[in-house]
Image (cartoon, rainbow, N blue to C red; front, side, top):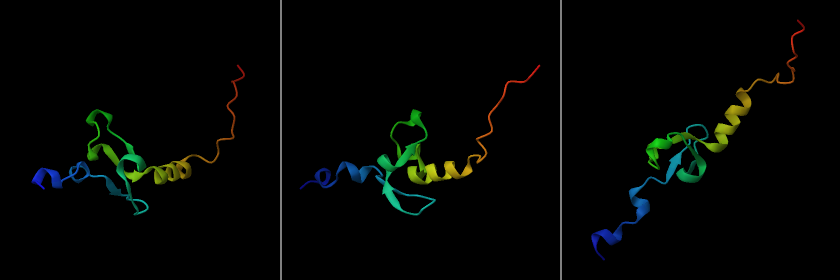
Length: 75
């Protein structure tokens, strides 16, 4: 076996990342959002927060008072 045959493609690319919010190690390509589309598929183009934690953060940070309906002003 030669030196080149001992390496696989996954050794060259970072495939897993630890989420900063929940601390779990997850798959980089499937479980993290791509934040910089112009950089392609580099590991630095993906966020450090997994998709599940991002959805939870957005849900809790949104305004709870969304039931107020806007009415046309009576001029």
